[in-house]
Length: 151
Image 1: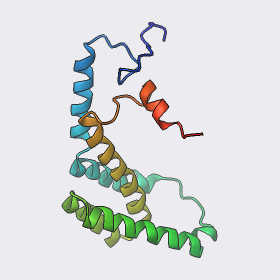
Image 2: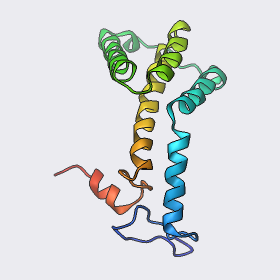
Image 3: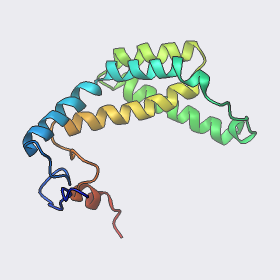
């Protein structure tokens, strides 16, 4: 904003006037998304995070609500959906099952569910973004207008 490089142009994927040519920046961004969010690479980063970061988290006290039938049912539903949509129908089954079996063998069900929900979203988003079906920036006018729910 200080440099007067924020722009409002509905035809662009970004609201930034880059120093480099616009198409070069978008092409580079798409290539980065495509590489960084490949299933094997992304799940390897989650594996590292689970082993190295999660053990150092402050432990939250358990509550009765966490063990409620409603939460157990919700967790089982999420688990079933993840297994079906990614482990059976998905196209990165090998990477998925390697990650899943390690988590399940260690009893890390919560880590598995939370990691896979985010990882699957990122993998799908990156695939769409890297071929131009999603915008290069979450700040673009097109994206903001498209994400506003209908009134």
